[in-house]
Image (cartoon, rainbow, N blue to C red; front, top):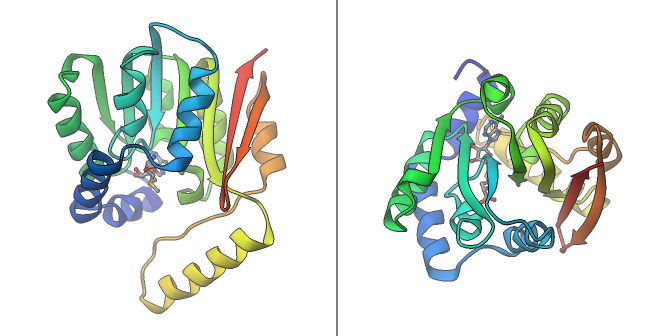
Length: 211
Ligand SMILES: C[S@@+](CC[C@H](N)C(=O)[O-])C[C@H]1O[C@@H](n2cnc3c(N)ncnc32)[C@H](O)[C@@H]1O
């Protein structure tokens, strides 16, 4: 893990967080924003697709999509604890042969990964300062579609993030959360156009398709 921010991310999403998230997923299923990503991807009507899930956490997106949309998935994550939890759930569901796990900063590893029909980033850009490199790399690995969730670019999200930032600084925690400008993120999906946009109170989910 060469980049300092991904070392911080690896520490932030440790075993306790991963175990708690996996327990929550098993109990309640995918979270609301994840459900919107799933609905957006399913709206494309794909079958036998390949999926690249960047920062997939416990792997909710491909645990669900392997049932009806994708035949295989690659999960790239900066957190080794999330990867371990995702691998455990993948095995439990009998999908061990269909998922590849990569522990890396996606911006470093992207070139080494095979392109996929669908690339997903569920609440990932908000953990990464250099959203330009992250999204360029994600669009570059997508043969067909890119779906992502991120905090809405408005005063409410910015205020919440400012309060979180203050708290993290007081705790001397180096982890940071970012609200990136949506117009700039849009422009980074090169060769793609946004085909849907869904909103929750804090989160927004965008689906892009290659033109
Ligand atoms: C807030 S968690 C979201 C996890 C999951 N997608 C979800 O919505 O529950 C952010 C995830 O992005 C990963 N992440 C952040 N920056 C990354 C990067 N540059 N490369 C790979 N993974 C990254 C973190 O390790 C973590 O798994």
